[in-house]
Length: 178
Length: 131
Image (tube, rainbow over the protein chains, first blue to last red):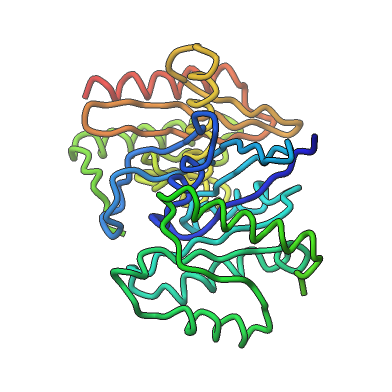
């Protein structure tokens, strides 16, 4: 049995804690506290890390880690990315500038993305259809980055599993990195 | 940033005065920061050019992780966290008021005495609970 680590990151409210909770077979470890930032309409926010476990059909186990979303916690991003086999970036399409949000994480994890596979999940596309997936693809193309990107509802286990499968498929096919 | 934490003015005044006293009176103190539980600095006394906002965020993360560890181990509420290093230490003291959950973070170099800093930060925390 092998054990792997996958890291979930993305904006506050994009659903990192929810995504890990959707697929974790054990009660996830969360470090949420009351959010005091009025500019963000959310009651609680992750300030440390999220952690969950998922066993694949092969028997391999995946340790799922989530980062805090806000940039003031970027010191944790690099720590949590250590030894990860892949990165999942979640974007909330209902925010004011979700394309810029994505760039924050592409830049923040640039070093890791040059050597690790990545999958990007865009949330709330059904209620906020703009920007479109094509707009995100253009952003990635302009950066010469080829990363699978899909619409997700992280409350749905199958959507989160699809993101993880997309990462693992890239690893198997060795189609990732700069 | 517009913050929902609205500490009473007498509490803020007390915090400003006491943090400055801690920074001035204890040898080796580099910075003392009172922050919200989610990592925003409220009051600070800086002696070495440290960025209080950065320290507030780090203290928030460490405090939250220590809370999870103490819960997992059935150790009750986490009161403080100490990071002891070869050239100093950091003390993070939880302060749970009725109107706000706060973290006090004191960072000191090797000239500081850990017991003195713990005493002063604990005393400050207890005082803040009574105001």
